[in-house]
Picture 1 (cartoon, helix red, strand yellow):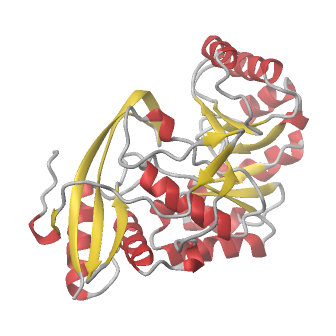
Picture 2: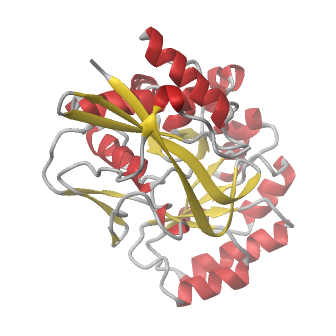
Length: 338
């Protein structure tokens, strides 16, 4: 007989980090535990304001209803948590959750700051060994973005390429002005740069730079228009926004059919979920791109041991990590924060 329990967590972030239009200072969520006899599986329940439409309370209620009825929750973050708990419970090799040989996947570094902070980060060696660095742009003047990117391109090894994440903040005019100032060969892609996402194919045509879609994947009209469109070469998948692992698998396949590579990313979940997504990336055909899974360093501490990242590659341990937390029965659980 399967039983379910949850453990709440609160992870302070070293410095406020932008995600989904919000500045995140503390990451709150829960770990779902699924047990049956001597088998145990875990999944993370952590909707994030600004990215997920559901609240933590909504997700918890959906999870409770689903485990009682034997269905799958409607809220994507709850569906993701339950799916991961079940897949790790059975050690599903389709998602890389069985015991594997020690391996590693490529990941990108992440930077959110101005040109002065970028120069200091380069001097500290924060990007040493990485093949790609994701840089947040569009939050100030075009000249400031150009200065920031210029510092990155000048200070990093010439082999390093940048991923420019605009979070839909730029106009077409501003984006073209920005890109005309840069060495396009060193820009891997621009991720959702425009206020009007439907103009991304035209921006790619004007600049010769590939585009990546993220938010558009969750808007049916934009997804239909942009998946496989000229210049749209990459899709950035955040699994807990999609739902169950089967949905993630379907999205990867759809992208591949349309000639698109996939980059797996997180919604600032803990190192437990990062470890699961790293395994998923290692067994999924995603085009060999670096993945957006090197966010564990943002936390002051974590739920499980953080996977080492060396020379831009995240190591994958042979066995799945186990969250050592204080669990309570799911039916008795209540969100401790309001």
